[in-house]
Amino acid sequence: MRYLIPIKQVPETNAVKMDEATGTMIREGVEAIINPLDLYALELGLRLRERTGGEVVVLTMGPPKAMEALREAVAMGADSAVLLSDKGFAGSDTWATSLALAAAIRKLGAYDLVICGERATDGDTGQVGPGIAAWLDLPLISYVAGVTGLTPRAIQARRLVEEGYEELEMDLPGLITVVKEAADPRLPTLRGKQRAKGLAIPVWGCDDLGLTQAQRGLAASPTRVVKIFRPKITRQVHLVRAPDAAAAAAAAAELAAWLRQRNVLPAPGGRKEAGHGA
Image 1 (cartoon, rainbow, N blue to C red):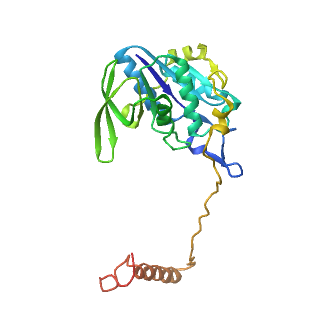
Image 2 (cartoon, one colour):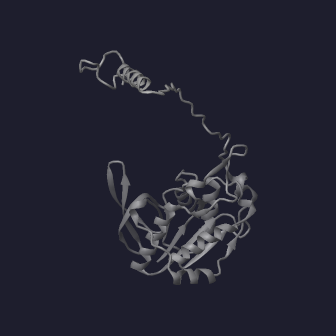
Image 3 (spheres, one colour):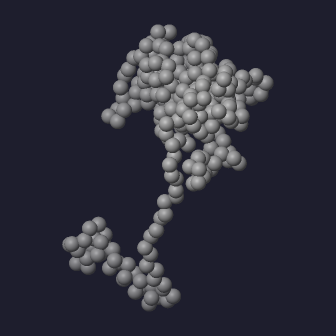
């Protein structure tokens, strides 16, 4: 069976920075990693291949630097990889991104299952996986917490919902998005790193995918970031200085009175004062 795993290279979570003037993410000079939630999708694909045999192919869309993410995925066990990289992809929203990835999947040929992470940590929309399914007219199961059965014709999966889990069956080929419960990602191996270093990974551009000017980048992106700003956090502070024991005692009494007014501390008689919200 053939498993296709779209992944994304994202800024390391603690290093995310935004350009307030353009409304875009600053990626230059920022450490980049494989989207952590895509690692669960990759691990699930590797485990399914171990069960059924076949091939795991990873693909991503991004700048040339995204090649690092693909080589890491190969080092973890993927068989092959494809990079979608072209200046024409710049400014793509989730609609345009899913369209490009769907075109790449068509170009890759026959497959059985597309496995996506639940969402990306830099955008947090969860739209690309379902978008790919829509462009390819594939059945979809989202929020998959585990695969309970798999044949060349169908997959049985446990889907996470608010009330617990749903047991679903879907015909193949199809697409699933997975949550953390699906699998614990493995680490790259030394042999895998050596193989990844020497693996030839093709790079496809807009023309390779047959995308017109209206199907790529900003032209194909109906959503726009109109404005981005950092919220201002203000607090009202009442500072009491206590240079000596007497002042400290007075400050403590003032604090206790303030807390009683808000019904946090009981009144001196042991009962909370009425008329104030907690």
